[in-house]
Length: 109
Image (cartoon, rainbow, N blue to C red; front, side, top):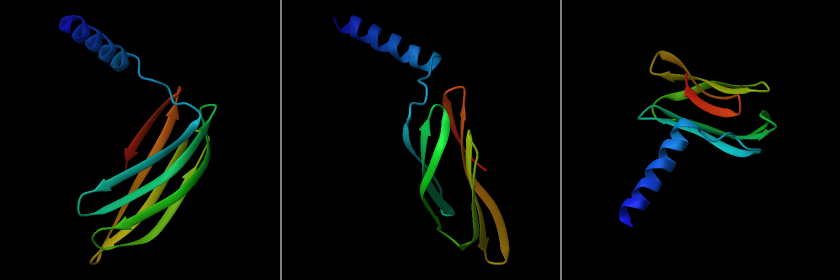
């Protein structure tokens, strides 16, 4: 009995790795924290594989401060651009979510 449960669990795990689930019409929280640097988050609403709304945009510098921010949205991609200053040095960072072929990816710029 234990072996059959293990085999079933293993097969299910392999299935979800090979065939990832698609993005459904819903809202998702996109967030990232860069250790001792900055953190950002926002919420996207998706319908019919398109980003329809962005809300609850939050960002914070853990060290230094944020001097500028910009949210850019298209049908399949949303990007939060941040400019942060630590001492006399300015850094450009960002957080991006992309919808492609029913799958969502999140990346840090």
